[in-house]
Length: 363
Image (cartoon, rainbow, N blue to C red; front, side):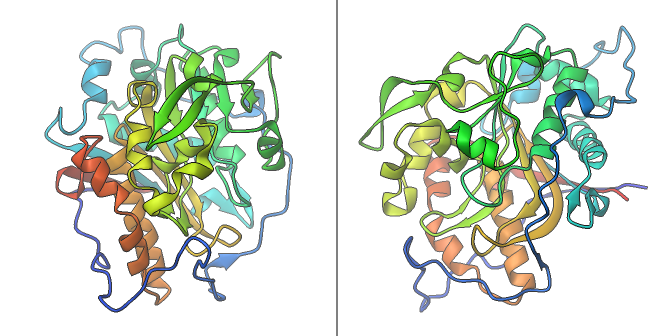
């Protein structure tokens, strides 16, 4: 049986950097040592296609929207609302050996979205957040060896379809076709089913942190965004999750790493095309990289929110907790991720004091 808890987010237990510790630079990341929680790269297997994902058992009635919150109310987060909510779901059964189980991911998504929204029917929650007339862009992360898992990405696409979004109006995207294909995604540009592709064009010149950038054509053309990041240590910004995931939506991300990516990350996420289109953040924390991008640990979590900043404060704490459990210090992550505080000052979302974390453990 699932167990649920809800509590205000506490300050990180390792949040105070050591006064004598010098954080590593982007060219000198801390190297991992063997840890019993680390695993080898899973064997590459066939990625589930959108049509192969299991059908839901949820059957909302015709009048199920009666008394359901409006979309604007569900999307309201601090400072519009008194606080922001981050929903965390843990399920150890998501792993079978080194394989991610799609059926379990779907169960985790159902639990996360009901816990987040308070709507007890998962498909109804998806239907309130997304409209069948909309094109939905799902921004995945394929920049390194361990990335957004195709299993999680296609499970999100499946739930959108189950909620009435036509498959060809759902686009999984990142920077390039090559990166997507290398990480196990099935390219599809114009065929039947869920779409998946890199940028065809970089458009709408804009300035971010004093640099000239252009924007990914999918992000510009879609009606709504789902941000589907992973959780990784990063040598320049301390860590990467929802906010930094948008480095894959601009043409020159390499120019945005100065001063620990601050204020580049906040300025990028303040662009109206990102801020106003973002409908949901689904943190794929089934596996995370706490030390470098070539070694992962099984964390077996999904984190969901409508507030990318609140999501990232919680994501950072998950990373710090994992590092502390391995007997190490994560003080350099705190030192380098000051872009979160800049984003907070710019009103991009909630900080620790105004974030409620709701947790469920499934068996």
